[in-house]
Length: 257
Image (cartoon, rainbow, N blue to C red; front, side):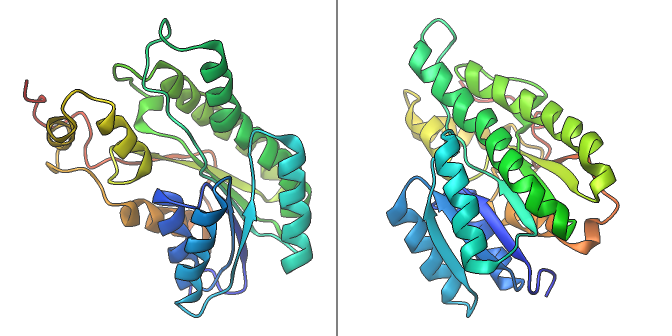
């Protein structure tokens, strides 16, 4: 098992890629903290992890709220005594242009997607320093190039890539590795929301698949296994990397109209 006896905190683990990642971390021997604002979703994830014989705990967390994040740190240490991996996965997506986005929507998207990584990293770093642990941030290929109707989301993902590199430089001396994952379209939560926001969701989903060289959108397990790799000793000489997991996004056929 790649993560035996390690404690991993995964935000946004009540659904989607976060849930599948929690299951994969548990499968590899990690004790998993399932952090999510959706308690029911987090508890369902815990059940799936425990079904493997692994240990997990659900903690309600709003990653945009400093007090909530500090409680997450406290409860993690009370439960497990230490932490080795922080996977900053929580995110939201507002499917609007800048003009259409309200200030409240903008601030919330920035607060969750980018601010959540700042707050969780800030408060967990002293404890990761003790274990010479690692941080994984969820970015996106939209951090490199953008698509219509998700201006704020693309802005946060570009910021996450830059923040990852900055944190890697600042904390390498502490033995802490910091990397990010940049998926293409994945058959999970945020992509589902994006498809539903389109005039013809089925057509939008089919068109998205054709944007990838492999001719399909990805599976959450395909991202989760990369997260396991980055959290493990197999990635011991990797830091500051933006790992692209996109099936050749942008290399496929143009979407059908």
